Image 1: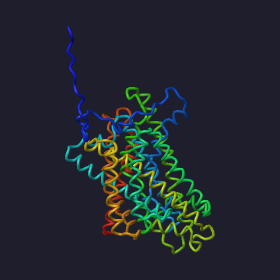
Image 2 (image 1 turned 90 degrees about the horizontal axis):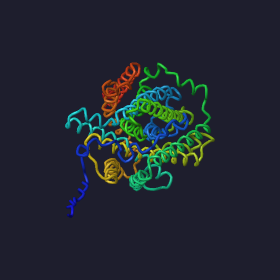
Image 3 (image 1 turned 30 degrees about the horizontal axis):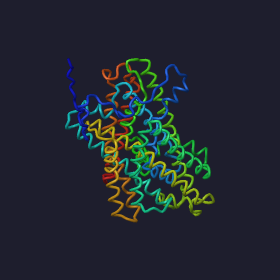
Image 4 (image 1 turned 45 degrees about the vertical axis):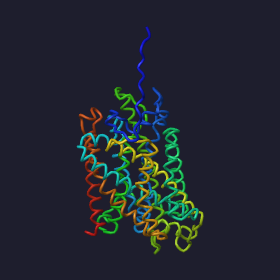
Length: 461
């Protein structure tokens, strides 16, 4: 007797699909748990396995949006604001370690958890706010990369912006090759930035005793209104909301058995070490930017408010003295391009995390990358075409982008602190009392400073 065989057709894949239909979808599903951690390996071998996510996080703290503020701070107030760079970096280390811990312990990213604990309507509103923050972050990277291409190769800014849009295809290819490839590419770009500014600061010959004294906070930062404004700008531009979402997701790229307490504790430990090491590099880069501004431009009447101004100043002996050279300008442009490209990679990844986490929307990888990039490129492109040939107007978008970031920041930080302080959610890995209180103090300071920046930008002060 012949058995009847039922033939069923495989359901056709939807172009758009909901993660609610697919069950509990993993964050960045295509790379989640893709890197195997060796069992019973030594400290250094284990650290090397966990090294990588931290560098993707760190680029958000040294993107082109930070450059002008840091260099202008040095040009106007010499080394006095180095203490602000230090404090901002310490706050970033605290928050990013909490973001990594959240992802490792819960197996979910910050966007997913925020959406789960809010209504559909509130979740959608939060997605809009966070999506605007991603766009605002990307604006700085796109403008920085476009201007770098213009300075290096005389490519018109509009064409340069279109070229930077194509990096979405590069990211798609890298994702197919493995997450380690993305980490290696970004690490190389960061190394270029670090070497360029270390070399330029070395040539500028900063006053070392004054430099180290700058890391000691001064009351003049609060009493001097102009200095306070720049200090707020440095703090406000340092902690990026998209980095917190990104950190909670890419900490899950290492395969961890969450049922094993020892493995979870080890993952948290080494992820935190990786994050702190890489954010220390970001701290060094931001310090170098401020020191460069102080060593080259303090006491001069030159304008350093734009990327083009900095490029021109570095080859003008009347501004920077005997070290002026076209090579210095070209190195600056190369570092700017490296910063822009490394930041756009992490920004696009953040866009995917936020879209899938908040509105449970999944689509083919190429479509998601393309939509994320188009959302960011379109306003910059329109502005560049309208103000064709006027880079000063185009760079003013950077100021507007910081306002968006300031608005979005509390919607990322407050849920992060709440979740990681929740005993029911985090179990034994809940924030220790000192961590919780330090996080709330840092959160309060950041929110107050960013509200102040918004009001000041709107002309209330």
